[in-house]
Length: 263
Image 1 (tube, rainbow, N blue to C red):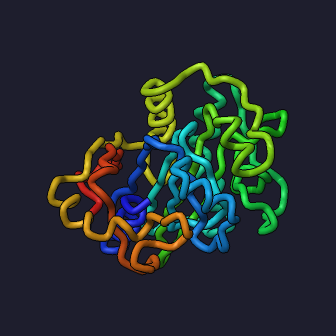
Image 2: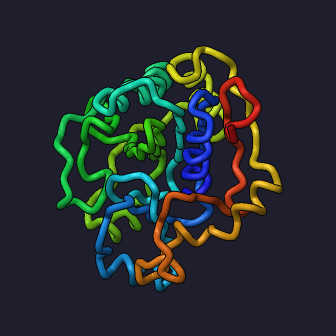
Image 3: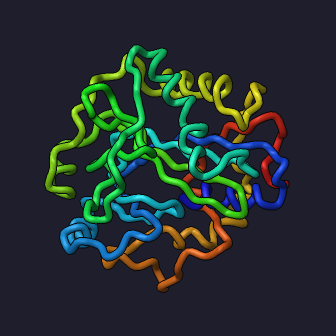
């Protein structure tokens, strides 16, 4: 979460800079909450206190997402050349193309957003991608800062049914198995991003990792996105305009054309 917010912040220093696309997975079952999602149900706090799940807060909006059986992506688009109305379509077309190439076409949901639901996957809005049977495969949310866009998404692969029921009191989406997994799935998604993301301009994307210096500089603020079992960030520090990351989240990032998004 913190790396993604930091990449968005870095893009503000160089609006003409390269976009960034990251894929990452989760080492423990983790519930990520939308930036404005309050309060937490009591049984979520109990599960966190018992060590069954970790809690983090996203810089982006939307409702809660259970991670662990998914592949998460983050797209940072400096000076996004789109209105907010059309941004989801432009920033999600590469996903539609990737799944169509795997023989599993997706389309956007049609339901209205609802704050009555605690789970991102309980409803399918125009920000989400679903199968023909209505099962929601990808839930996405956005954060905009001065015209630059961070779009988060969770690509559900094998959502854990027992934990899903315990958290959300409903069944997980009934998803068809994918023909690709692991690194092969990520390669398919990256190829589609190169071809179909408008912010990439059809150029090859370079894969980079955060440098040790970047990680060291950003590690001090890692608690900004971690929540305790009481649903509060350690030290009651809330998300602010300056974002950072943790050495524990050292993931590769794919960056269009330029060697660095730092500006």
